[in-house]
Image 1: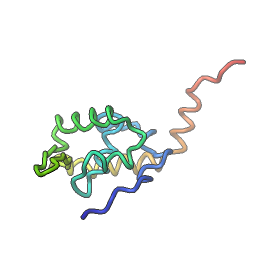
Image 2 (image 1 turned 120 degrees about the horizontal axis):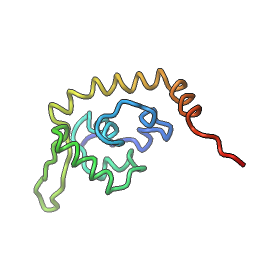
Image 3 (image 1 turned 30 degrees about the vertical axis):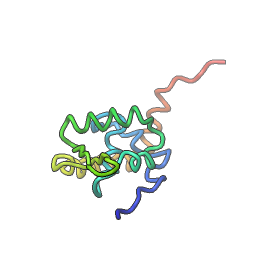
Length: 124
């Protein structure tokens, strides 16, 4: 039995929202992180990715599969189910992803300040 993914794996103020370096779509990097320790079912991914709608998560998984980062496997049985896991290519992107996350964390305040300066102030 594998360890469940914690619901608070990604804080609402997760630096990924400010990360200017994109790995696929908006949610792809978070999906990759969820799969870094082994295969997961869709329902398992939904726990830490609760802010993502099922439709958008499905789209992200399909995109990652199309690009060769994720493998989708249908497991037979009395109740067939699907698992998603990183491919070799998917594992190879974890190191650059970690570097991008570390950079974002180091520059969090600078990124926030830049966005605040760029956001127009509402006029009364």
